[in-house]
Amino acid sequence: MTGIAFFDVDHTLVRGSTAFLCSGILRREGILSRADMVRIAWAHLRHLLGVLDFERVYAMGVKPFVGTSFQRGRALLDEGFRDHVRPNIYLEGIDRMKAHREAGDSVVLLSASSAWLLERFREVVPFDGLVAFRQHVKDGLFINNWDRPIPYGANKRVLAETYAAKQGVALADCAFYSDSTSDRPLLEAVGRPVAVNPDPRLRWTARRRGWPVLDWTRTLGDPRA
Image 1 (cartoon, rainbow, N blue to C red):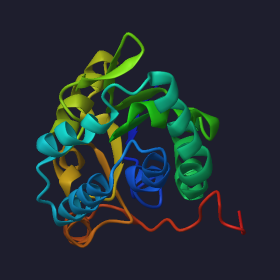
Image 2: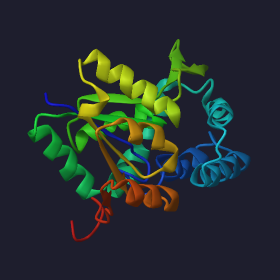
Image 3: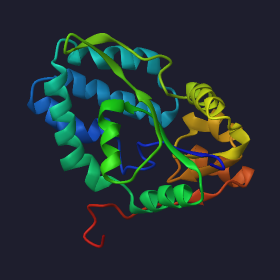
């Protein structure tokens, strides 16, 4: 292994947000209320603006699932992946992940999206590690607890550094692909930062810092694929 390639997921490997893409199914099943949908939309907007209070948002976000059986929740996330997330995975992202593995790099998904959902990405492309949001399960039910720290903002740098250190790799030998200015702490720490479909502030930062900027457009669900 020569290094680690970390990949953000929402708006980077996937066109859109995995939470948004799966929300219709969860609303249909009564897990999410109309008020929950409004909160998801508001949180998404605040994320795009770079002012998201993510600790508070995730604390609220897990509550609709508390008491839901893991088996049922996992089945719904599997449906969401199959019907809504998988078709929106960027082909260019898949190619880039494969290229890193062929070059000897380890590939790791690093995202605040649900780990239970992101595990399904192995159907599309092999990866070596997953660092994501994971709500806890006890006695077969989702509970009001989760892994900490949440992989968002500056926490991503902490988690990536910890993961890399366990593999004997320095962040200087790592790559990180992201769309969001909220991921700037890790982008500034790795040796190979890459902005993918970046938000306006990250696009400006990338151009000023000389980071590569990639615009991915083709997805698995594209008729041209």
